[in-house]
Length: 358
Image 1 (spheres, rainbow, N blue to C red):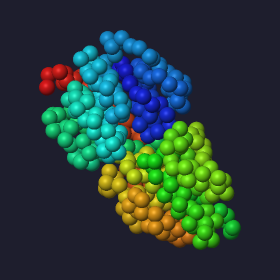
Image 2 (tube, rainbow, N blue to C red):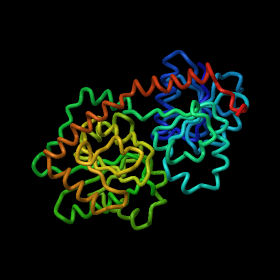
Image 3 (cartoon, helix red, strand yellow):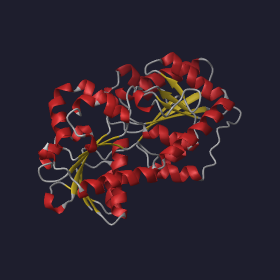
Image 4 (cartoon, rainbow, N blue to C red):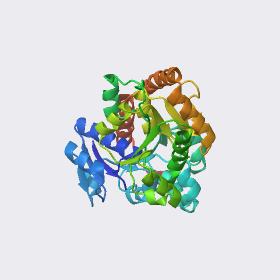
């Protein structure tokens, strides 16, 4: 199989990691994986090391299909659809459609022209993008859920992670994901400061891209940068470094206001970390408050503070939630995800349903 992947991002984000894992599976199966991409983000080197090619121009007859990654790359679909079957992989939740409805006609065109559209959740299909899909035949729409990262799955199988703290040891909270407004890092920072004021020795590490950090309000930037005793802005780390961060943490926190499906939360769950998460519609069938996570509405800082304090001080609760979270993560093993995505690619090559026909 000869795959042309098209993306604007090979950064350390969920959509890019998903693309990386899939293209590695294509290569492992003896296929060809070229990526139409301009930039120098971290996964570029990783893909080159695995045998993929990074290209800036293409001859479409060299490929069996194009894989357009993320809604942000929608403009590539009408360029490629007359020449190749297109698999359009949509990772976004509510934020992009809510903020950029001026692009709605272009998104509708991209969906109509795609041979297959892959979503992460039924929520995206039935709620977020349903109006764009009303004229798309059902056989072109596929849901392939997220999965635990392969490096985390390997580490979790032999992990001796313990939540027990030594006397006087600082409470460590971990947040993984790009640091910018949609992720609401200010909520977590506010809670950390509040917990410290209550006498709890707590520290929070933010792991992820800092490229959009300056979009945060000035007072929040000053807090994150000016309190190294409470906050570390670690930036993008290598996969094994992220695993080490998880092994050293006592709780994982996701304060995001919108996600289609957070890989970072799944990874933390696989490592047995207790989770304090935003209560989001895309994962309502995965995370259950009091069973495998503690949930708070996005922006409900008081509720988030209660949840984190409980995770850090009530060790039996944290251990029970972490155990249940790890069991939940077993439903999202990497191999079924890759098999499903490879199946979509093979099906598209065998039966492309030329988009121009409907």
